[in-house]
Amino acid sequence: MHTEPSTDTRKLLLLITDLCQAARFCRQDSVFCEGVTFSQFLILDALATQGRLKMTDLHSVLAVEKSTTTRLVRPLIERELVQREKADHDLRAIYLRITPTGKETYQKVWGCFTEFAETIRGKIPEDDRTDAYRALKTILDAIRNTSSVCSCNPNDSMKLKNGKTEFNIT
Amino acid sequence: MHTEPSTDTRKLLLLITDLCQAARFCRQDSVFCEGVTFSQFLILDALATQGRLKMTDLHSVLAVEKSTTTRLVRPLIERELVQREKADHDLRAIYLRITPTGKETYQKVWGCFTEFAETIRGKIPEDDRTDAYRALKTILDAIRNTSSVCSCNPNDSMKLKNGKTEFNIT
DNA sequence: AGAAAATAGTTGTACATTACAACCATGCAT
DNA sequence: ATGCATGGTTGTAATGTACAACTATTTTCT
Figure 1 (tube, each protein chain N blue to C red):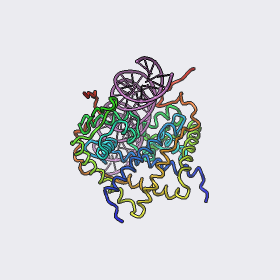
Figure 2: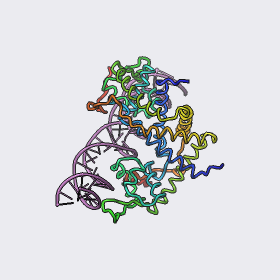
Figure 3: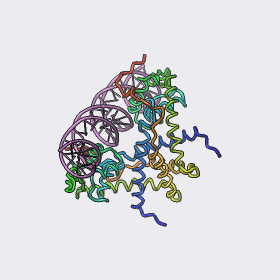
Figure 4: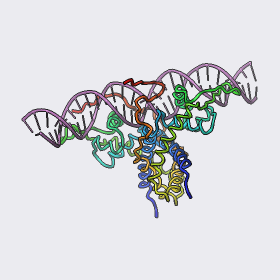
């Protein structure tokens, strides 16, 4: 059986659409609680399970740019769920540690997330579960490891976004 | 074999983390071209394949709030990739139609996306492919159909959001 | 030792995605 | 009619995100 490429492309488009919707859904406030967003929960989780971490470590946990990490962490520090510590071996680095309050909050939020996770789990036939997880992981990895700079994109200097035009006259 | 809940919850957390990253990745500019974003591509696709559509129809295609639809469509109209038409049977409704320019752009972007899709497809073992797609769909649907308002969330009035503070660590 | 390069982190800026609430115009039902 | 429902836009704002510029420190190489 030969799969026609364009049909398959469309299948992937639909899947990715669903994927984006699901991702959106998972980050909704209603999934969490205590005023903690998904990213913040990930940070708390990393700190709670791995102990003291540097900002750099968080970059890879969150897979975001360093400036983004700074901004994601900020509200946690303001709320004193996380605290900053100077690293003595390197004055540039900053360690983060979860505070006792942070730990409490983390546990509550973990509770919320567990409810959510259990509901989802309940909707996946038990027999399929392991396979489904594995399959999902395969696809997600495939997506993430695709470094696609689309070939028709040689020079996006005059990209039109939201009606605002920039002309590069050289 | 009994699956321990908390382990399984963690498994789902990791999966969802990956999911969000993948979704983010898929919407990157590098996947598309012609200055069209993922959502805009979806709109063009819907119009190209289904012909004239009302804003309302797009709400469900995109699964977003109506105000969001308005804003997503706007740049396409400004760039004249899509045009608005009054519906005569209902003066409130507005029909959208893809323009010839829009169709051209759509085809180019579809090309970009095809490249992307093919790269991904190449990374999923052929035997697994059908199963993987199905499994993914199962999980995504499970997620989307989970109406989780977490029970510890009676009143999130005192939420602290991204304030602006300068760090002072001494 | 001193200059150059690399690394850690913050801030400025900007954009994408998204929602809720308020609003306007039109259509429908009682 | 009058009032509720529907389709759409605008105001406002939160969240996530990146890139570039900058500071401060550390490392590396001459």
